[in-house]
Image (cartoon, rainbow, N blue to C red; front, side, top):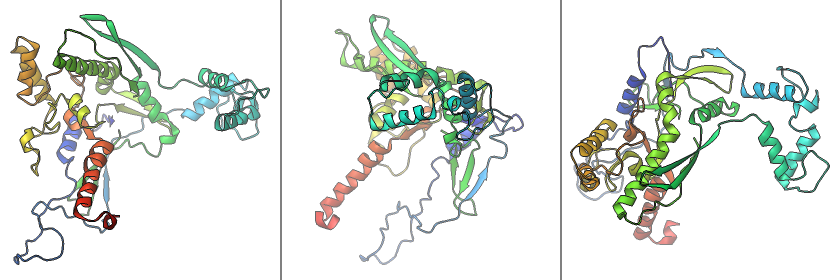
Length: 403
């Protein structure tokens, strides 16, 4: 989430470009002094690519962006809006001030008839009480209807059907929340006030400002689970249709971000402060197969850089992938081939999957999808690294010694 400030010359693109430059400058890689004596000695490894981590806690120095996150006005908080609507609906008039416990209990606990009604509802949900107790609801279903029909709506749910031209009867349902409403709901929740970062900043690990880390701000949707039908389709053609179905679904869900990212939108935070923001596609957390699907990368190669599969064990990264480069590969292959098979092979020659003609991330402002993908902690770090390290340690020592 990037914030607009009319008085600052630095553009959103400049901020993202600087972010990309410093993104992986986490810890310096410096080879330790090589000991001239080659005899085996106890101590740390002397591998030239060894990363030295200092256990001493350095005092971090934070430098916030001087103008971002400016409050342009104040509005009602979510709690204040709900209090006003509940008092009006409960017969208490248009009262916006704070209310103490015990004062006009009926409208305060709307849509429930009284404080006792509300407390029993809490008890019924927690303990599963289903007996009829003479309340305004007689079971959990009726209770949920009271809550769903009377509490102000948050992010709206939508649904869309997608089909391929040659199989119009083979429809695929996607259900999703309106992405802009979801953003307003998340940023407007008072529970998140202390955790939302509106002003990007650099955090220096020492006073010399040698290494930096960027701190900044990060829609529910259900994609179709129906199988792609087509008895005449090859395995490659079906795989391509699955990719196209995914990208078309994501395009439908995220399309409103394009206009809002360019033209901006005003957001009322949980503290009532109104800020002007530009929502952008900045981060996509996924495991490796989904990273390849999202970035249109050939499976078995790197979604982040252009190193071929045979060089992925190198200690340094290759030339970074860019969204424009991937788009050019797809467009050139499409313009210079006569069949889908030729198109796919031409793309794969450049380590692009060749499954789709138009990825969902095209024309998103300030977006580099290869920079946006982020590792999935469970599959890539825990199962992909830690579990292998444990197995290696089991092979090197007795299990009891490892325990």
